[in-house]
Length: 72
Image 1 (cartoon, rainbow, N blue to C red):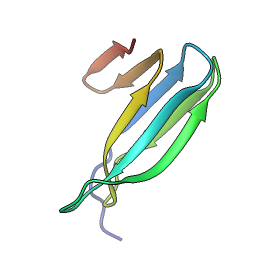
Image 2: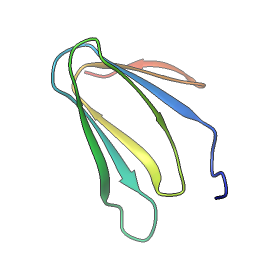
Image 3: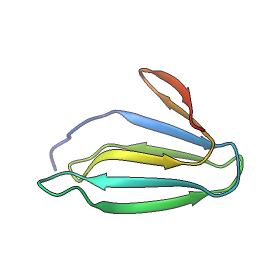
Image 4: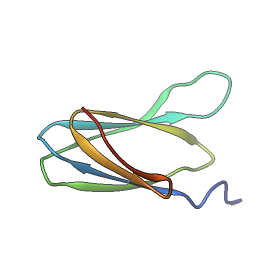
């Protein structure tokens, strides 16, 4: 398996019910994975040959090598 990217994203839920949605690569963008996080839960995600984007719904702290952002 060829490595696409070694970049990780860390998502910490600041409230219950934060949704983390992985989106596919390719001609048509589709959902390929969803997770629901409770307050204080942390998810570490990696971009792969199948996942090209991550969507976060809810209040969360998102950390990447580019910095930290708070979602509303």
